[in-house]
Length: 74
Image (cartoon, rainbow, N blue to C red; front, side, top):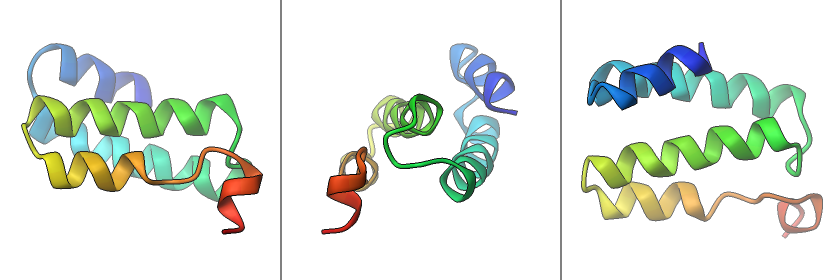
């Protein structure tokens, strides 16, 4: 799912990529620790997606998500 979303992004098909990235992130967030590389990868792709769409508010929202256990408890 994540890989298909990345492919869609490479093809400038952000509208099709977004639901896949969100679903991948939600699954990874449920199962993985905040510092897990796959979870961070999903966050980074969501940031890239919203940067490509020129949506600074959404970009900032995703950048603000915790990427370590220490930050997740704040």
